[in-house]
Amino acid sequence: MTSLWNPGWVDMSSQPDNEDAPSVPGPQKKLETLLSQSGNKNCADCGSPDPKWVSFGPGVFICIKCSGVHRSLGVHVTKVLSVNLDEWSEDQVNALAEMGGNLVANMKYEACIPGSVKKLKPDSSIDDRSDFIRRKYEQHQFTYSDTDNCCPYPRPASSYYSRSSNNLGVTLDKKQFEKQVTSIKIPGLGQAFRNSWKRKDSDCRSSKKCDLSLGMIEFVGLIHVKVLKGTNLAIRDMVTSDPYVIISLGHQSVKTRVVKNNLNPVWNEKLMLSIPDYVPPLKLLVYDKDTFSTDDFMGEAEVDIQPLVTAAKAYERSSINESIQLGKWVASKDNTLVKDSIIYLKDGKVKQEMSIRLQNVERGILDLELECVPLTQ
Image 1: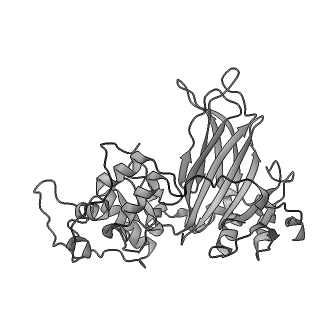
Image 2 (image 1 turned 60 degrees about the horizontal axis):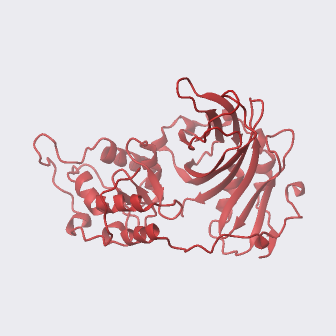
Image 3 (image 1 turned 90 degrees about the horizontal axis):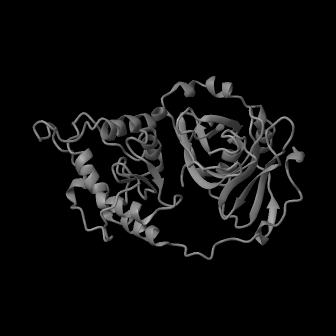
């Protein structure tokens, strides 16, 4: 176990940072103003206080537990963004404000809830959340009837309807959304690193929870994947390629933008996925974008994120201000690492940096930065 801990960890506090920029940019300040409105101080679905997520389709502020179900609805219904972790543009915030917030949305999506249906509560189960949220936003079961323009059910008693929608206090545009370092051991983390490369996709398939639909799965947090760059990628278009990366975790998939004519692309693009409680491996696929034919395969890789999740849970409420190395995944012939991958704690965030050699292709390396966000954040 001692071989997994790096005693020669360099002082991260000596590294330059870019914290000279204003801590609260313009769009972020407007977003916080929206969040402070009375109707937006609680999750639009379950009423949990201090929601930190936005479901952009209906334009509502929601809690992290409900956000997992919203994300499973698909991009054709909504897109889920973090108030604090995502970078918001002026147009996005203006479009969100224009939709009116939780009060306006619930006047539409909860206009006629039948008496047999109970509204969600902060302690509602994931099954109840999935059922209610899908009926509310995907099936539109609680909106007014299109045929007779009236609600067949009595309106439920709710504080949502006892208040009027206040002026949101945000200018609207007619635009839409398009130190000293130590080393600490965490019980079980070293073993997780040792076994990391051994985990197979069959481990996930053998779990009964893998058979559940996405909306029925309990989420333990989110993972921020920053795709930094690719190096010496394979040629697929005569002398170059137009690469992009698809990242999947369980049933979820996201992808980067296409970088034209570049075998050493720089993305610096952040993508986010929900982490199911059975923690499947993170899969990466690289493709060359083709206009008139099927996109060409440029390699793949797989990352076990269980050690990162373990570390994030252990330091979820840590008050440590130092930069701490939590663990190291040692590069070897048995894994795809180009160099040792370090999990570290800095500024209260648990992150992991890695360079991965792409598999089933003649060449190519991907550089990533992972950050695990525990459920309570």
